Length: 210
Image (cartoon, rainbow, N blue to C red):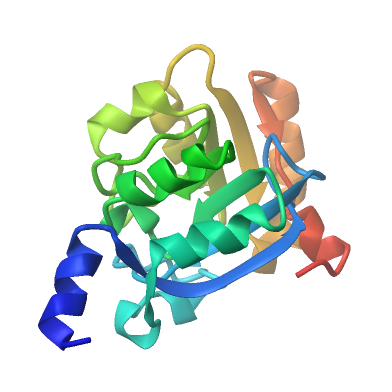
C-alpha cells in the first residue's frame, strides 16, 4: 500500500501503529486482578522520564495495522479490552471502539488525557503527566484518576488534578516503580491522612506477570 494512502488511513483511525497486543491480568488501579486483552498503540510525545515503555514513543517504529485485524484478535481472548500506549488519544479511537462495541466487548482506555477524547469507552483511566497536562474536557469523564508518585511534590500535583474530576471518580496514588521502596511509606501516610485517595500498586510486576 502506498505510504500516503497508509498515512491517510492512520489519520482516519482505520489503521493504527500497533506496538503489541496481549492477553494478561490487569495489574493496576480499579480493575487490578482481572483478565483483559491489552492493545498498546505506538506514539507518545508526553515523554515521562520514568516511562517503562519508551519503545512506544516513536510511532514510526510500529507497523500501521488494520483495525479490523486488531478487533478480531481481541475478540478471541477476552470481553474486556484495554487500549493503552504510548498515548492512544494521539489517534482517532472512534473507528476501533466502534468495531469493539459491535463485538459486544467492554472498552477501557489508559490515557494521560493530553489529547481530545475520542472513542466509546466503558472505563476511562486518566493518568495526568506534568510535561503535557490533560485537556479540560476529559476530567468530567474520567472514571479513575491515577497519579504516579515519584517524589513528595507529586502529592500537590495529585490534589490539583483531583479538584477537576467528578465526585464519582476514584482517586489513586501509585508509586513509580523505580522509587517504590522510598516513596511508598509516604504514600501510605498520605492516604491515611487523606482517605479519599486509594493506593494503586503495579501488582503485575510483583507477580512477574507480563
